[in-house]
Length: 263
Image (cartoon, rainbow, N blue to C red):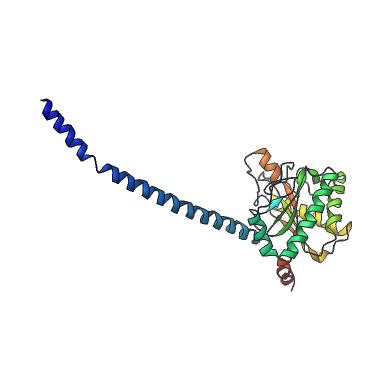
């Protein structure tokens, strides 16, 4: 009996000998697949970043950019968060699109705004970001308007005038965008958030023309209602950030587009 058991045991060991080269082969194949996956992952991430940058050209709100110390590139309205540093890759893409000279001008203007906003204690409610459209100055609606109103608060005019003073040195087209959250308004004056957001953008344009001597042919007023959120509208914090005015110093890349619209 003992001999039979010993022979059976030896046959079993001999039969498992093939597992060693097989396991080596599997390990090698696994390493190859990991390398291939890593290469494809890098390419897909790069492609995603390029897609996000070009979506900014179409005036979407998911732009690749970087913000001031007053807010993140996707935030702003609530303000106060740490800024997102500009990566070398993003800088190269923005420089390639705008041109090095214009990009440097946007950076200089942004730096002047950031310093001035900080000194005036306004960096908690106003933030800046450079993206594919140009320089975006984002203001929280709460500091400019009462709920459901498009009339700029008297005590908040100084904030707007301070920003406008720094922007009045550029000859670029300036786009004023009004944005709301997704809470329906349904008032007689403003039946929907479309009307409210547009009226707020127009109110800012009027201030820039009447009190800051901006050239009217260089200003554009746009209302997006709740349809260009930068945060989740399911939370109060997100809705607060979505209620905003974006003042955009447009890149000269859009000059021909704006000039063609009036021909």
